[in-house]
Image (cartoon, rainbow over all chains, first blue to last red):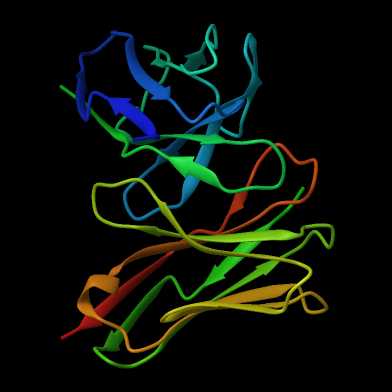
Length: 112
Length: 112
């Protein structure tokens, strides 16, 4: 099945720790995205990448970092500089042109 | 940039009744409007989309209407069922744009 796989489903972070969320897609999409969703809220864009080895900051990039070394992978690191990391993180990908984004099933990050 | 507003934020209907969710957008160049359904603990799933060259699109119990002049589009769900209960997001984008711009979501509850 083609789709987007996010792992882990649940993740816990200790004080001062960096954690990395995985996102893999087999849809052969060039563009990939990371969103943050707080309880009862909408989607806020963290980072996006239109092509391998290139990425752009979204609306709330502070405290996060990404890499795009492979077309199918777009990991997100939540650094210790992100003081309020508890949220639901969603990864998405999009094909060429004016087409919909496809989402993974998210990673829920909590603080220990 | 684009600004998408979505109303209402919560909506409760009796099973079998219709539900309508409305969105407005600010950028007259926007020409693609997808709708997503997000169930608890899952990522958003595309349910229907419309492009600016049509005014209405229907898929079984779901329909979307678009008024380009007024810059608003709506999701209509008829004969609602309990499994329609979820959060619904509208979005907008235009040709050549990198991103979709999302509304803030509507929590629909269908009461059996």
